[in-house]
Every structure is written in structure tokens, then in C-alpha cells.
Length: 161
Image: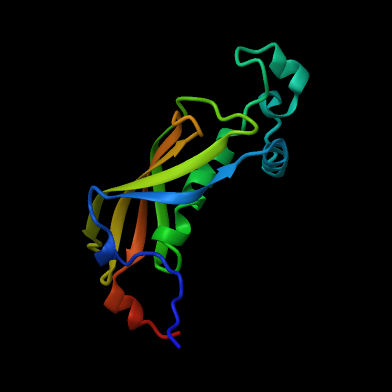
């Protein structure tokens, strides 16, 4: 019987200027927002206090932007880095141009914008990914540039397990 184990991509498999659509989307609930906000000790009333938020410019509580970021990155894992990542190297250019609200469905996509072999770690490469989150209406709610270090296929296969 043929067996297929889901995994991320090896360095050689990442293609520049390729957009990966991560599906299904994730409909965000009030419970998601409150739980994430309290778990991370973020006491921002904009996420927790409906009465206060009603008097603010958006007129309601908004989803915690760190939840939005974590979700768009998390949605990419099974397709891009599951089991092939060495390290998450960092984020840059993180923006939230439109709020995410309770009940919105978040769709994530990633474009590969750069890749190079590591100069200091043979058998590994650095890939630059631009993650984008859109709501159900196609409005961009978040973007982030992320660099990850991933295994090259042959080097990973040679690692004792």
C-alpha cells in the first residue's frame, strides 16, 4: 500500500513568484478573540470591552491583530514548512491595513519572494515568504514578510533520527 506523509517543502521545492493558497479559511469567533487576547495577557479594551469599543471609531471590538498574524502564518505550516523547517528567522514589514471582525472568515496565502542557500549552515537554505490574510470580501487584513531556514532534501535525509 502506498503511504503519503504530509510535509512542508524542501529548499529545492520552493519556487520564486509562486503563490500558495492555504485552505480552508478560518472563520474567527468572539471566543477565539477573547481566549487569545487573555492567554497572551493583552488587556486592550479594543478586544475585550464591547461597551467601550462601541464608542471607538470602528464601533465594535476588533480581533486581536496578533491572532490574525499567528493564524495567517499557522495556515501556511502544513503546506510549506511542516517537518522541513529548521528555524523561524524573523518577521518584517508586518501591517494590518483593515480590521478583522468577529464572524469574518480569514483566508491566507503566501508568495515566495526570495531564496538562497545558507552561507553558514550547509544543507540548509533561507526562504523569504510574504504572507497575506484576506477576509471573506477579499480585503487585505494583514501582510507580513517572514524568513525561514529550511532543510535541503539530501541534507535532511542524512540526519540521524
